[in-house]
Length: 67
Ligand SMILES: [Zn+2]
Image 1 (cartoon, rainbow, N blue to C red):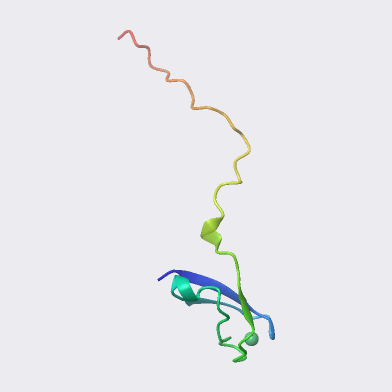
Image 2: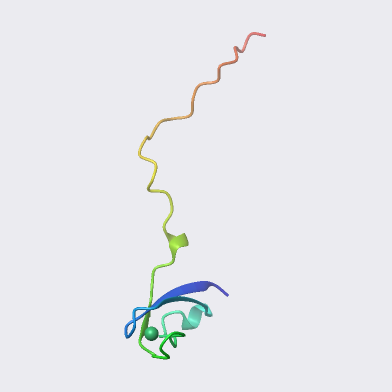
């Protein structure tokens, strides 16, 4: 079961909850205020890369093929 992150609309609490994928979009009960108005945030693992801007290729092998 994947771990999802929710943000409460009522108190602003951000909490994580293990929810089955079929219920991932359903609002979860906030553990801080007990409110049922929460929205699923985008999981952090969905974001990949982005930090590397140097699109350099692999460095050439230093060793000579003639050994
Ligand atoms: Zn709350």
